[in-house]
Image (cartoon, rainbow, N blue to C red):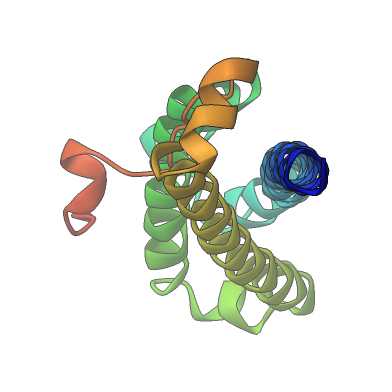
Amino acid sequence: MALVETLLIGVAVLAGLLVLFFILAYNSLVTMRARIDNSWSQIDVQLKRRFDLIPNLVETVKGYAKHEKELFTDVTKARAAMASAGSIAEKAKADNMLSGTLKSLFAVAENYPQLRANENFKMLQEELSGVESKIAYARQFYNDTVLSYNTSIQTVPTNIVAGMFGFTARDFFKTEGQERENVKVKF
Protein backbone atom coordinates (compact mmCIF):
# COMPACT_ATOMS: atom_id res chain seq x y z
CA MET A 1 0.00 0.00 0.00
CA ALA A 2 2.80 2.42 0.81
CA LEU A 3 4.39 1.86 -2.57
CA VAL A 4 1.12 2.62 -4.38
CA GLU A 5 0.62 5.79 -2.32
CA THR A 6 4.18 6.94 -3.01
CA LEU A 7 3.73 6.24 -6.70
CA LEU A 8 0.41 8.14 -6.78
CA ILE A 9 1.97 11.08 -4.93
CA GLY A 10 4.89 11.05 -7.38
CA VAL A 11 2.53 11.02 -10.38
CA ALA A 12 0.44 13.82 -8.84
CA VAL A 13 3.55 15.94 -8.19
CA LEU A 14 4.81 15.31 -11.71
CA ALA A 15 1.39 16.20 -13.18
CA GLY A 16 1.30 19.32 -11.01
CA LEU A 17 4.77 20.37 -12.20
CA LEU A 18 3.77 19.75 -15.81
CA VAL A 19 0.63 21.89 -15.41
CA LEU A 20 2.71 24.58 -13.68
CA PHE A 21 5.20 24.52 -16.56
CA PHE A 22 2.42 24.95 -19.14
CA ILE A 23 0.91 27.84 -17.20
CA LEU A 24 4.25 29.61 -16.80
CA ALA A 25 5.27 29.04 -20.42
CA TYR A 26 1.90 30.22 -21.72
CA ASN A 27 1.92 33.34 -19.54
CA SER A 28 5.48 34.11 -20.59
CA LEU A 29 4.57 33.89 -24.28
CA VAL A 30 1.47 36.06 -23.78
CA THR A 31 3.59 38.66 -21.95
CA MET A 32 6.19 38.73 -24.73
CA ARG A 33 3.48 39.04 -27.39
CA ALA A 34 1.93 41.97 -25.49
CA ARG A 35 5.38 43.56 -25.14
CA ILE A 36 5.83 43.33 -28.92
CA ASP A 37 2.46 45.00 -29.50
CA ASN A 38 3.36 47.72 -27.01
CA SER A 39 6.78 48.34 -28.55
CA TRP A 40 5.18 48.61 -32.00
CA SER A 41 2.76 51.15 -30.56
CA GLN A 42 5.71 53.16 -29.28
CA ILE A 43 7.17 53.24 -32.79
CA ASP A 44 3.78 54.39 -34.09
CA VAL A 45 3.66 57.20 -31.53
CA GLN A 46 7.05 58.53 -32.66
CA LEU A 47 6.19 58.10 -36.36
CA LYS A 48 2.99 60.07 -35.81
CA ARG A 49 4.93 62.81 -34.02
CA ARG A 50 7.36 63.05 -36.94
CA PHE A 51 4.45 62.92 -39.39
CA ASP A 52 2.91 65.94 -37.64
CA LEU A 53 6.18 67.91 -37.60
CA ILE A 54 6.96 67.52 -41.28
CA PRO A 55 4.38 69.97 -42.71
CA ASN A 56 5.68 72.72 -40.42
CA LEU A 57 9.25 72.01 -41.45
CA VAL A 58 8.38 71.92 -45.15
CA GLU A 59 6.50 75.21 -44.95
CA THR A 60 9.43 76.87 -43.19
CA VAL A 61 11.89 75.66 -45.82
CA LYS A 62 9.54 76.50 -48.72
CA GLY A 63 9.78 80.18 -47.91
CA TYR A 64 13.52 80.12 -48.52
CA ALA A 65 13.91 77.47 -51.21
CA LYS A 66 11.05 78.06 -53.62
CA HIS A 67 12.79 76.43 -56.59
CA GLU A 68 13.14 73.04 -54.82
CA LYS A 69 9.63 71.89 -55.82
CA GLU A 70 10.65 68.32 -56.65
CA LEU A 71 12.03 67.84 -53.14
CA PHE A 72 8.81 69.13 -51.57
CA THR A 73 6.81 66.80 -53.79
CA ASP A 74 9.00 63.86 -52.69
CA VAL A 75 8.53 64.74 -49.02
CA THR A 76 4.77 64.97 -49.52
CA LYS A 77 4.67 61.61 -51.34
CA ALA A 78 6.77 59.95 -48.65
CA ARG A 79 4.53 61.38 -45.94
CA ALA A 80 1.43 60.10 -47.77
CA ALA A 81 3.00 56.65 -48.14
CA MET A 82 3.65 56.62 -44.40
CA ALA A 83 0.02 57.51 -43.69
CA SER A 84 -1.33 54.74 -45.92
CA ALA A 85 1.09 51.99 -44.82
CA GLY A 86 -0.64 49.09 -43.12
CA SER A 87 1.74 46.25 -42.35
CA ILE A 88 5.04 46.42 -40.51
CA ALA A 89 6.93 45.86 -43.77
CA GLU A 90 4.99 48.66 -45.53
CA LYS A 91 5.56 51.02 -42.61
CA ALA A 92 9.27 50.19 -42.56
CA LYS A 93 9.57 50.92 -46.28
CA ALA A 94 7.58 54.17 -46.04
CA ASP A 95 9.52 55.23 -42.96
CA ASN A 96 12.82 54.71 -44.73
CA MET A 97 11.61 56.67 -47.75
CA LEU A 98 10.51 59.50 -45.47
CA SER A 99 13.85 59.49 -43.63
CA GLY A 100 15.67 59.79 -46.94
CA THR A 101 13.60 62.73 -48.12
CA LEU A 102 14.07 64.48 -44.78
CA LYS A 103 17.85 64.10 -45.12
CA SER A 104 17.56 65.69 -48.55
CA LEU A 105 15.46 68.49 -47.11
CA PHE A 106 18.09 69.25 -44.48
CA ALA A 107 20.81 69.10 -47.14
CA VAL A 108 18.92 71.74 -49.14
CA ALA A 109 18.61 73.87 -46.01
CA GLU A 110 22.41 73.94 -45.76
CA ASN A 111 22.43 76.10 -48.90
CA TYR A 112 20.34 78.81 -47.25
CA PRO A 113 22.15 80.55 -44.37
CA GLN A 114 19.13 82.70 -43.58
CA LEU A 115 17.03 79.56 -43.20
CA ARG A 116 19.55 77.89 -40.91
CA ALA A 117 19.50 81.04 -38.75
CA ASN A 118 15.68 81.05 -38.58
CA GLU A 119 14.59 80.23 -35.01
CA ASN A 120 11.50 78.34 -36.16
CA PHE A 121 13.59 76.17 -38.48
CA LYS A 122 16.16 75.50 -35.75
CA MET A 123 13.44 74.50 -33.31
CA LEU A 124 11.75 72.20 -35.83
CA GLN A 125 15.07 70.67 -36.85
CA GLU A 126 16.01 69.95 -33.21
CA GLU A 127 12.57 68.54 -32.47
CA LEU A 128 12.69 66.31 -35.53
CA SER A 129 16.19 65.18 -34.65
CA GLY A 130 14.96 64.17 -31.20
CA VAL A 131 12.04 62.28 -32.72
CA GLU A 132 14.41 60.47 -35.11
CA SER A 133 16.51 59.33 -32.14
CA LYS A 134 13.40 58.08 -30.36
CA ILE A 135 12.28 56.23 -33.49
CA ALA A 136 15.68 54.53 -33.77
CA TYR A 137 15.53 53.48 -30.12
CA ALA A 138 11.92 52.27 -30.45
CA ARG A 139 12.83 50.19 -33.53
CA GLN A 140 15.74 48.63 -31.70
CA PHE A 141 13.58 47.82 -28.68
CA TYR A 142 10.89 46.35 -30.92
CA ASN A 143 13.39 44.14 -32.74
CA ASP A 144 14.96 43.00 -29.43
CA THR A 145 11.50 42.09 -28.14
CA VAL A 146 10.65 40.21 -31.35
CA LEU A 147 13.96 38.34 -31.10
CA SER A 148 13.18 37.15 -27.56
CA TYR A 149 9.66 36.13 -28.51
CA ASN A 150 10.64 34.34 -31.74
CA THR A 151 13.42 32.52 -29.91
CA SER A 152 11.01 31.40 -27.19
CA ILE A 153 8.44 29.99 -29.60
CA GLN A 154 11.11 28.05 -31.47
CA THR A 155 13.07 26.53 -28.59
CA VAL A 156 12.29 23.46 -26.53
CA PRO A 157 10.20 23.17 -24.36
CA THR A 158 8.22 26.39 -24.89
CA ASN A 159 7.81 25.58 -28.59
CA ILE A 160 5.38 22.83 -27.50
CA VAL A 161 3.17 25.36 -25.70
CA ALA A 162 3.55 27.85 -28.57
CA GLY A 163 2.46 25.24 -31.09
CA MET A 164 -0.50 24.13 -28.99
CA PHE A 165 -1.83 27.67 -28.56
CA GLY A 166 -1.03 29.10 -32.01
CA PHE A 167 1.81 31.50 -31.17
CA THR A 168 3.47 32.47 -34.46
CA ALA A 169 6.68 34.30 -35.29
CA ARG A 170 6.60 38.08 -35.68
CA ASP A 171 8.34 40.16 -38.33
CA PHE A 172 11.33 42.34 -37.55
CA PHE A 173 11.32 46.02 -38.45
CA LYS A 174 13.98 46.07 -41.15
CA THR A 175 15.18 47.96 -44.16
CA GLU A 176 15.72 46.38 -47.53
CA GLY A 177 17.32 47.25 -50.83
CA GLN A 178 17.88 50.92 -51.55
CA GLU A 179 16.94 51.98 -48.02
CA ARG A 180 20.25 50.51 -46.85
CA GLU A 181 22.31 52.63 -49.23
CA ASN A 182 23.55 56.13 -48.55
CA VAL A 183 21.14 58.87 -49.54
CA LYS A 184 22.29 60.69 -52.66
CA VAL A 185 21.34 64.34 -52.72
CA LYS A 186 21.16 66.05 -56.14
CA PHE A 187 20.66 69.74 -56.74
